[in-house]
Picture 1: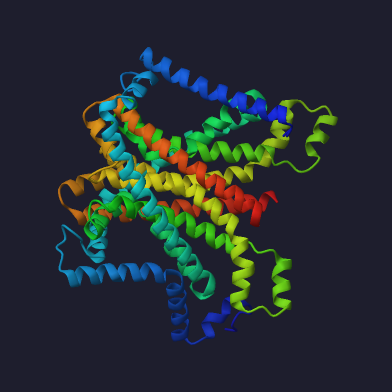
Picture 2: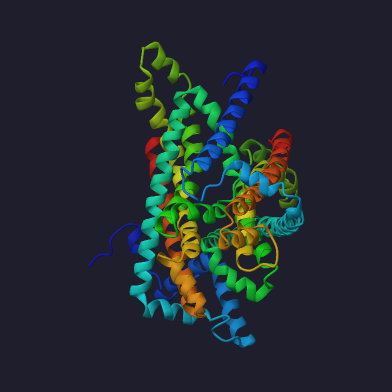
Length: 253
Length: 268
């Protein structure tokens, strides 16, 4: 692709036009009921979001969800990173760690929810499902990143007689960082999916709870508002992790 | 009879006990994590004395599946079929959108930021929305799976169509190939390995997302077996449904991985 300033501005402009076209289409479909009663106009959704009497509700829900997402994200990162290290530093365990994460990931989250409720309680279940989703992505990103060492660099370390620790600290870990950062970005939507799903199972607060309540009471604009809130949380975390990924891939890539 | 030469004859002349042991060791090396989890689960049930409504032991879940094979097989096949149909629809739409974006710079400019935004949308949040639009039945389940496989397919097909061998595009242009011929003989073949990556990513989550949608709809498949069983406090049956779902999704994922490997070997 061309990389002049002019073409970049042009790309941004077409992109903005695309987003605006999408929003107009949303409004038109809603206004003329092209998709039935379940599709509200964009303006009616924004109206709900801008109603001052609802601010308290939205704020409590978003705070609860963001808190669960962050806690689950950190817990999932620590577990995924730690488990990947285990498999990397003791290669005999590697097949087993791969297999275990694959199986854990293949268990439907809705199946785990009742068990997690037994173990952690209703309020912590969103955190636990979020952590499990993040765990899988971080495990894969870390273990493939640790293997992505440049052969020449590896030979150099061997030739100078580096021990296992130095090799890990100065060669493998830095080489894995770009992959880990990419994994952390991918983990954002997965973290939100886990949290919202967990909230569906009866968490006391959160955006997911707002969705269920709106769906059961046929409050369509409210339902879409809750979805928009979850997208806003996800997009802002994506933006943050993209910045981190950009920095890491420049510094270590 | 003379023992045959070669690798196949080796296990026979070894001590059968040692042979069994090596199989056992390989099994443990592969599944130690799963064995620990199952063991901890069984032990937890024994120690805590929970009854089967709260937490049934793994053995009775296995027994449940074995004695109700018909029910689970039917629901499992239903879920599998919905997952496959949804994935096919989503991947077709994603590929068509990627080809349009390849063909027209304007279209690509319009679509790329939208696609970026949509990858950030938590897919389960769309379940209640789509259910309101399409109805509380199997169509919503198919639509959810299609939406989830659309984006990997769009992104990976798009990058594949542009991952051409160096100089090949110039060669086609110099020889006066039409856009159609460039697409048919150069860009599409180049996209196939990337397309398989999208298939692997889609296959991994298709069954799982189908189950989440079925659980919310409660009309078909393993998800509804699960939700009905849970509503009547039959946790053993609910976990049986999860077990079958896990097995199906692992098999689907493994099939997609080997399909990807076969295609990559053939293409390189």
